[in-house]
Image (tube, rainbow, N blue to C red; front, top):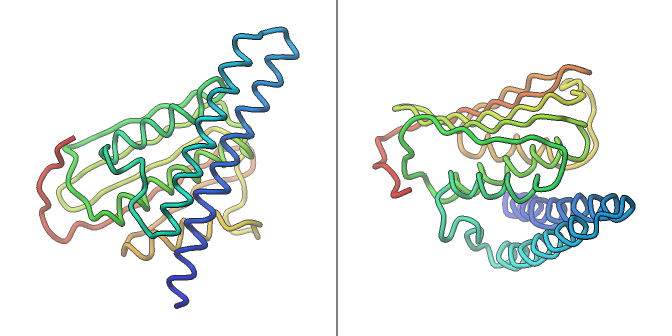
Length: 209
């Protein structure tokens, strides 16, 4: 029961809290564009905010039913990460990119969901708290390991310090649940790098993506 409660808490945080954050980012950008008389840009931000809100609502309903995230139903993990980054940073000042190395492999559904949610959480932090100008997500497939590296050049923080919120704890729990390792490299004023390594105990076939 405790494990299920923790899973639901993570999912609610990732679907509702992160979804609302994406909406807020776009609404703030719309307000800024409107104040500068940029009506077309403001409308585009409002449209993105509406799209993010609708997607978050769908994700929340699916999380309650413990179903696979909509973003992964018709897309590979790579495509889902690229799409997420593009939508969340569209029209913002954050320059974000996604890098893939190695041949994509078929992963357990839970792993794909966890990696997508981790990427979403870290990107949200870069948008809302880090005051970052650049963000890079790199997914690396190796014969015996999978690496997800998430970097920004923002304000950074002290990883050993006390942090409010559920985000960092949720990331660590997801990684531990997959039997992986997480390394957090950050310092005040020096940006943040989160490195996740997952072991592959077998040789899964390449994905269709």
